[in-house]
Amino acid sequence: MKVSLREIADLVGAEIIGSSDIIITGISGLKEAKEGDITFLANLKYASLMKTTNAFAIIISKDITADTNKTLLKTNNSSVAFTKVVSLLAPSVTNHPKGVHPSSVISPKAKLGNNVSIGACAVIEDDVCIGDGTVIYGGCYVGQEAKIGENCLLYPNVSVGERIDVGNRVIIHSGAVIGSDGFGFSMVSGVQEKIPQIGIVKIEDDVEIGANVAIDRARFDKTVIGRGTKIDNLVQIAHNVVTGENCIIIAQSGISGSTVLGDGVVLAGQAGISGHVKIGEKVIIAARAGVIKSIPPETKVSGFPAKPHDIAKKVNACVQRLPILYKKIKELEEKVNELEKKV
Image 1 (tube, helix red, strand yellow):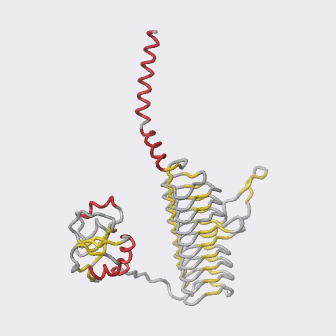
Image 2: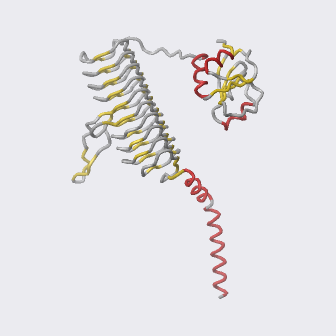
Image 3: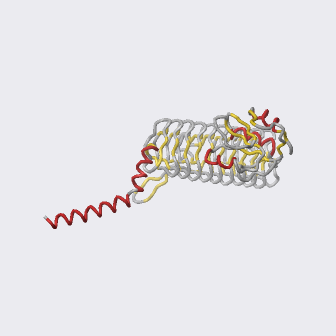
């Protein structure tokens, strides 16, 4: 597909710095781009690649000062602009299942909206309600009385437990389990007795859930994933957790029971949060941080136990110096011993 740079600039509302007569034939990253491509810069640590990229044009944010002879498109948000360009130059060609596959097992008590598609060997139990335009791939399971909203997309082998409530435009990737029992046990006479988990999971609108994510049902009431929240692969969310809206939860993170996340919280990879704590709005929890107490809004924390990032960096700097400090202490001990012998 060939598109003029002027068309792209109009699409994303960009200012062109350089030639506007360029024809764009492809789209790629800075390093991989070839002649005819358009690319973008979102992270300044890759700014040096702007000098060497083969791309004909680069989308950058207006606040970036670029040292390159390439034609630039300056926008308010280069990542968002690039996403729009991808849709223009490389539209999705995924062909989702259409209609209801004859091998699927659908209860006569289930209610399907208009234009619902259900793939091979999917199982839809009694009293399930599925909204208009939703696509459920093969091998999925939807338990009794579950509700799935409009224009949702469930990839193969997703399990949605009984009475789970999924909103509109939700995407759930393969292997995710929504509504597994919360991990609740009590020691009775030396034996771990299971505590019934009778609550549900509520997934609000525009949530995306990655592959092999487990979201446990509540012991009572509900586990809630807030509107617009995005969850990466291999995340564990325990019973009665409530996330705010537009949170980002990165791969291999774990959130223990009854924890509450405010709007816009970011959990980096392998972050862990203990139970019954409250994380304020727009908190950033760095990779592999271990949170054991509540965190006020708009704070960045790291380390274990998690502490304000500036403090954590100083602690880590001290730890890195331990071998040197140990050597100095040994030298001082030897000098003290020599002085004591002279005394």
